[in-house]
Image (cartoon, rainbow, N blue to C red; front, side, top):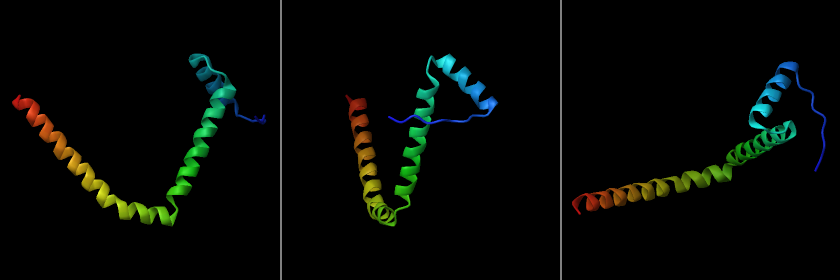
Length: 85
């Protein structure tokens, strides 16, 4: 685990204090959660920009849509059977 120094402007610090008090959470816990979310989002954006993954998505998307449509048709059939019962 690493300790860092963080400078917050007064408005953000007060808002963070209020939020932490309302949620019964520690500032460090909240800031760590926010940074973790930021890092994960940045990684995901980077991954989504990968041309190979974009190509793979474009290749698989029609099959995915077809499977979803098939699933909805089956779901509709099951609903009709339940209504008829």
